[in-house]
Image (cartoon, rainbow, N blue to C red; front, side):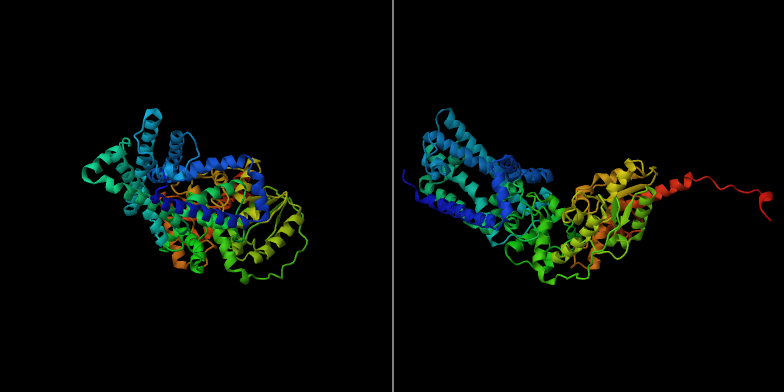
Length: 608
């Protein structure tokens, strides 16, 4: 059989998207660093490729993360992605079995019911006909759910969805038409040739009863082919570009490629991997301040279209709530920081006044951080606890020390931050200390990730105090106070430290379990990362968080971040404490209780 003309839209569209993907993939890979490209070549033959294939199966096809978010939403995505994948694979196997070779024109497997109109015979023929109808039914159920989601997203656990642009609408319309048109086309062929199965044959019989099928056969196959071709051509300018690019992202991530502090090929891969599914929208606390255009999905869209404004770029808490919900696993915070660095490169300060002097020798360096100095009860509690435990420590930033540099990085001032980092790193290394203890999660993250301190443990004071307790250097005593613990963004989602603060608090108070905690914890709203938000908008975000705390009627709100403490204290009458204060309060009470009582003198013993 000669190649039918109606297959040309499909073939042209497929050739276009394959060529486009090859070109952009080469461009993105060329934009990676030389070390990243070497890493990829080294990892390709190893187990990383097998793990990438497994992750592609679980996330890009089965959409495991979306299933965890909402099973109905997960089923919708899976039925479309995995169902279409199986339809292609099983269709090729059907053609290969029929032709006794894998060497056949591609169109014959895609349009098999037209290419081979004879009814299915034998076990294999009936098996494949039934399987293909079942897969088509599976996909159509997903299409039906997708139709419904457009009108009622709340049924899928989504309060908000993203807006569609022109490319999205074209591709979405084509996608919604592909499988119903396939059902009609195969139904028409079944009505004419009796080559259908449990879904397509009844459809064909129904159509044959009301329509002139011989006149419709080629037009409906034309329509199906055109829908496929339009979808492929529209893919690069639509959200559906994420389908192939997400697979590339998975492989690069498995090969060890990571986000950098500058825009490169990996950044572009991540940006184009966003499906604009909208799952991140409900997670964003900017909604509580009625700010609805700066969310990550919109920022990625604007980066992709090269229309990103500073208002969208800098009006973000960088709390990471959207990032933990992203089904693709895009490094949303890193991308935004990278864009900020690109945007503010010319504004970097010099910090020429920084000077390196001799550092005292110590076993432990304690770095309180700027925000801890603005909440001095925290640093005083830490000093008393370190002294009680007889730790040989140096209070590095006790007097006029530079900032850790993290707030500058968040604002895009990378060059300035690097000067502070270099200055602080030299002082820490000169001290000979093997442990660096910090009280601020913002400081903890930058010391852990950007300082490169060989043979130096970086610990938040929650971790270090727990270590002192476990070593018997700090006494424990459980009080009846009921407290809620707030996970700071940079300590929790940013650094993965959830259990140690709870283990420490469990030695001293009764800890209440909340609905939104650990990975799902709210940001306090006081984030230094947002330089566009007003004070009134911050207060709305903070008050929403405090409303949840108050539902549990705690005696105290406890956190492990000085900025969170400062933010919460301004909005509630409930006592807000840092966990270092909780520990010192208990230790000091035990010190007082352990002292011998003062002897009360009898009147005759009072000296005259």
